[in-house]
Image 1 (cartoon, one colour):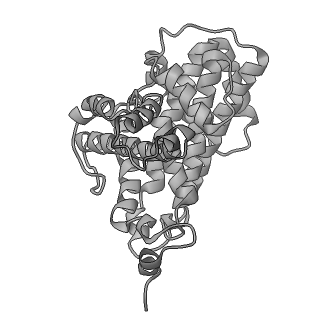
Image 2 (spheres, helix red, strand yellow):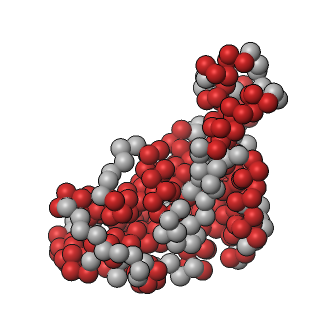
Image 3 (cartoon, rainbow, N blue to C red):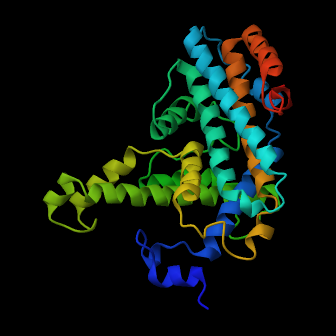
Length: 326
């Protein structure tokens, strides 16, 4: 009997060619190992609410309107709810059952926390995932307000710029995403590789957009070998930066849109994914603690105290905010 994986890799589907079907040798390990690496780094960097408050000690308090303040509170509560959901998923015996939905839950927890930081920074609320990532990169990461391991970024996608920006992350360690990281040095290696892979993925996406542009079609070429074609491509590359939120969005996109066998097919998946939900929880908890630390300093001690007391008293979820944000 031919396996479903073999069938798909041989014939493809209505939406993907055989070449576009993910290679199980790389797709599954890279998914699990990147999150394992980030969990190791969150722990190694001792990222929690108290270290975040210390990190943001010099951030200036801002008078937010009631609507702006409510948006900060709302988005932090969204993030807390996703942590509670992941903690519930951790009790499921077979982690393959919840791996895909776990990634989506994790992403929206990160997204909510990042949105809270943006609202606290300038009182705005971006309407799309792409604009949220751009604004978080500009207002938080580029402004040196993101904590490790969430602080690395690529300033542009021009190939020479990417290689230069990757020098720092790569100097901390080297390790393949196909192998489980065990140490912080290995985790930094996986961290750098995923950042590099996200850059390559975004470069491919932008190249397709450029190919479909009127300017490119007017050149009468079908590749980027000419100086004029490269100029169009590099102009697009130069306007695009990459930060952790772009990586998170790519990670969520794989879970949302990749073929059905991803995470759900293969005898080894359940064993390989055994600690996966715990890693998702660790990383989201760290990111949420960072966001809450920033927001608490931005709004001031009294408003934060009132929010925490009300949330502790009125919460419907079983998970206490004091476990993350105190």
